[in-house]
Image 1: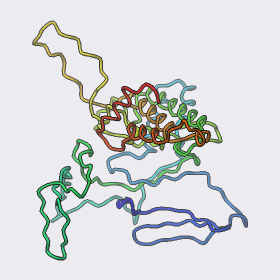
Image 2: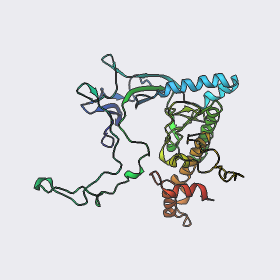
Image 3: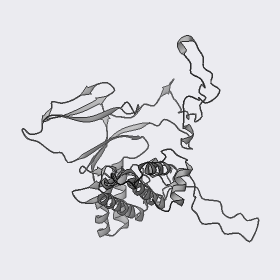
Image 4: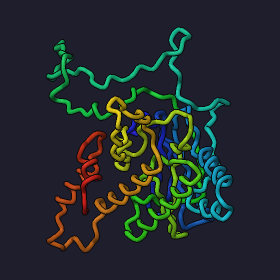
Length: 351
């Protein structure tokens, strides 16, 4: 909660000896039940995963979106394909928006003099003081340029205006507990998990949907079934939907290069027209498509190879950990707009 000022609450588990205790902490109080003895009395194992989220108020819940995807599969696929497709999607038991005192739990609308207050776009290039100052001594700073003492990366914010959005408090209960691929250390299991994620994308694309947020946190490994599944459908959309398409969606490390730059960059060269005055049809507006989902899978695979190191490399003098880290920084700089990421994707011939 210290790292995210927008987070309202957090759950936790502590184990001391044979005693387990659940904790709830919010901005007002900390609550915990009596500790549970792990080896005495009846122990009930709950094989469920609960997602508590604060989604944007105009977005549907993940359960609603997944329900629509399954409906599309049942409409457009053969019965056998529908059964197979469901194997590769996370299973949701139920979902519901949180209601407190009979009202939906949403963030407030600021109201001034009974009129709605319009959100103001954040200035992407604020004027900060270029020298330190001490307010207690009435030392007034100057505000005519960016601070030399505060390194900023404000230019990496998305091109669309940045605003504070209203959010709704929702809860989703999943079928069972799974492990995100980022926490899987076996290369064989990683590859099986990615294969399952690709299979899910295959069916998703076949019925006309794009996921738009494939990452190592959304590819799920189910060890009991030895299968990989795809989760987090919060930003999934029908590819031909007339609804607003957020042009820059996805986890930054695994975002397709074209999505990052908001432009088609790998299109074939345009045919030269016989008429010199004919410039041809205008370029279509940029929209995320199936290939961008597939590229995100490629980025996930590259991330796995860079992030994990096999045990045999510990004593291998030919292994250069510093070089691996440098290449990792080129491929995954952590900010939007770095040319190193595009160059790595388009020009790298080996890892």
